[in-house]
Amino acid sequence: MRIKSLFHYWRRNPRCSNQISSMVHAGAETMVYNDIGMLHELESFEIDEENDVELFDTPSWTSERGGKVLVNVDSFGAVGDGVSDDTQAFVKAWETACGTPKSVFFVPPGHRYLVNATKFKGPCENKLVIQIDGTIVAPDEPNDWDPDLPRVWLEFSKLNGVLFQGNGVIDGSGRNWWESSCKKNKSNPCRGAPTALTIDSSSSVRVRGLTIQNSQQMHFVISKSASVRVSEVLVSAPEDSPNTDGIHITGSTNVVLQDCKIGTGDDCISIVNASSGIKMKRIYCGPGHGVSIGSLGKDNSIGIVTKVVLDTALLKETTNGLRIKTWQGGNGYVRGIRFENVRMEDVANPIIIDQFYCDSPKVCSNQTSAVKISDIMYRNVTGTTKSANAMKFACSDTVPCSNIVLSNINLEKKDGTVETYCNAAQGFGYGIVHPSAECLTSQDRDYCRVGLTDIAQDYVTDQTKITQLAESSSEAIVHTEL
Image 1 (tube, rainbow, N blue to C red):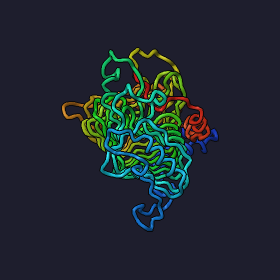
Image 2 (image 1 turned 60 degrees about the vertical axis):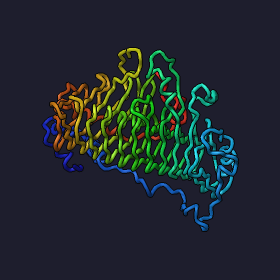
Image 3 (image 1 turned 90 degrees about the horizontal axis):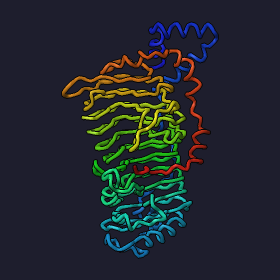
């Protein structure tokens, strides 16, 4: 449905038709059409996953004509037996590769390299390739971890125009970390754990073909970065491994994830504060907690996420599907989100907005402020649910959700009926919407009034705010253990 049909929806709705008429007579015609344009933009905005990141031509580094300088970690003393500590060999090889134009930092196949927590820092000379074909493994004993780097395993920062690629494996050896988590055993003390791979404060980065598995906590974090392309990446951990998010995006813009297969013990993909222009395409998710925006607003913080697209995904046996989660007491907004062409297979909570999120051992107190959620589209979402509430919009009474758009939704439960739950949520559906979402239009608040006066002012993404949040945020990249 494009502008014309959305406009016709408003015209056919008596409340909206009267509102449009009165606003036009009051000289507000431009704002009405801006709002219709907002919905058109929500339906149609795209992020180019190929052509807008200019890295460099990357001839095969194995070719004699490739013009690449091979920097092999073995040449710097790496043993690759999975037992000897190869950290210093990796550090020395990185210093050489980073300082040499057109170099390849090479981790060769057929070996297991034990590497401790390390920060690989840029900026580097141009056209750097990080070729990982072997296996990099982390120490498996939490008590032996470097106390100066408690939340980091392999971190790459301040890079520009860098390619990560290969058929290799980054293995976090996380089992002992999971077993010592207070989420696995409440008698254990709560503590944080490292992220396996982090790309921080970087731009024009591609990552393709790698496997990241069994992380101590989060697997792959993209932090404070711009123009990142991730493709054909496999992320894997057992479904009972706590806080092992697959790909976590924070403080970043213009990020594309495509053709990735993710199965972990937490969110397959999580997008949090100060992130905008995120595209996910052809994603397989399961097991795990689904694809999430948030959580946002914890400890009365500001959270902003805008312009996110998920296009073509299969979610299988996940504990949530398409989720937006915010804490009570937060501020900021989530808007301009489109989920489309998604197939669910035995998913609990296939579509869920939860403004009462509370991942805490203590009861969360009721608070009136909240992260505002608006302009959210779900289109062509089908499959099976484990939950009777196939769609749940649990929104704040004081900061309600607005402009939720449902189009061609068909969710069934194998052994029962399904329904939609709404609290303080405004929106509408067109095409097939099953289960029915009549509760979206049955709120006491006037949807048309909200839609035609608030959205035009809210919709334009305030890039300055996002940049300021990304630069000033002192929030830890990873989960705080609970």
